[in-house]
Image (cartoon, rainbow, N blue to C red):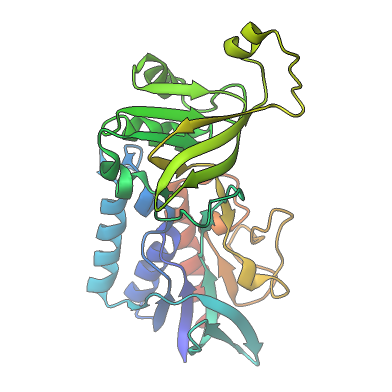
Length: 317
């Protein structure tokens, strides 16, 4: 019987684990991998006391610290469901393993949102990626497309510009939404072409990605030159030749295993109180999986610490 089971090893889960193991609590971290979203992140320059660090380096250092303190990790296994017993909880994983604990901290973060278009599943890992840090160098001197229009898409394009010969940004909106300084950097780049109001419709290729199809939802100069009627509701289908596609369209809470167990918000995030407690006594949550207003590395780490202290107060009573 563990004092606490932590589900997830992103910034919130790793911080919670460090706090609890330093209090000599018996804990285990159940996770598919280490780092969560931050392991795919580019340069971090807003974490206090660390001027510059990459996402993978931050995750690696936090993991190493937790291991040195004696945190037990169960890797490469996904939580299937949580059952509540008298005074304790049982967590079952997809491999069939079962773990018992007096309390639980949910820190399972988010997973990348999918495009849900033809060819997406077939070309996962064969040109379609969600990790610029991991896969960007593979596209040196090649042509890539970034799907998205927010800060993550902007960061991905700026990182890819270092390697790729050409970078398209397909933005569903009419304008990019993010830090103006970084948007200006993109607009000044000779390598980057921004395609506004573009909806991806299909990914094509043989063994690897070769083309991307999209519908333009507004008339461009070429459309106007044809003098043909343009239906903005239907759009006009076009295609570009690309070697790689980076999906940067946001994330969804990893809470599928929690439905019918815990109270979730309309957007499927775990609802928490100010002390990170949920509607079930003994179950706490932290990080991007929750309905906390802002999603940042420093906030996730702080929320992990809060959840750990609240869980400690619960299982020591």
